[in-house]
Image (cartoon, rainbow, N blue to C red; front, side, top):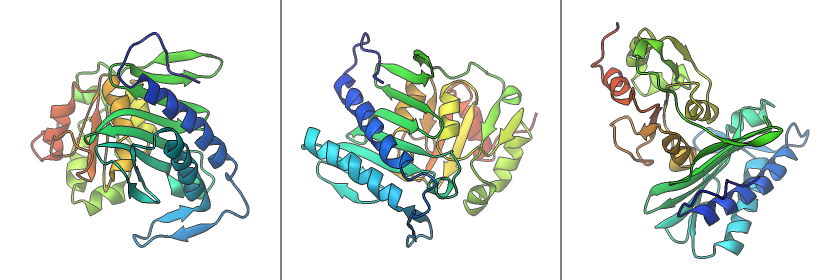
Length: 272
């Protein structure tokens, strides 16, 4: 699968590489799905890592080292190496806890950031047969089984009470001291669900949700998401409204309602 080639963009070659890397990573990950001998270890932060996480990141790093030796790499499992100003950012399996329980809601995230700004992103969910990708100036795209890739766009919903939101998990918001604001927001919108991990961001980019937000995120959790959301016409910031992937929070919206959501998250909005 390749990105449409009739659209000029400055990162066309890098996006084509990222899509090829995703193909290789998908194959490594899918070979370990529901494996009886899957190795699971616990990290210092009490989260889990599997041998699949490690194998996928190794496979991605091997390709990048061969094809982009002058670029840096930041990965969840093996840290940072090389050039920090032009850096590939990798989450080999986003949703490890789903992966280890045999749930299909996990993804492989690949991004390229230049001077800290994500310029391309690929999100692959091979257990669902889905993939999304974008690069600056090239739009956001997804695969459609049995058809040509199609360009995606966020929704044009402009009324808070008509919007649908995903908040990841109650525990996460409670630990961040934001549970009261989340509950207030759920009372002002049409629908709320905790879909979790990377999938709801992609649904937002396709126009099916208007808000996805979470806390405790690292750059590798969201770097690949940023170009896809923004090239689809949305907006993505930290909870303070700054466009940053290093502030340990993320808020993705359809853009139209971004400021209204921020008001609620800072205790300023009112229930309609």
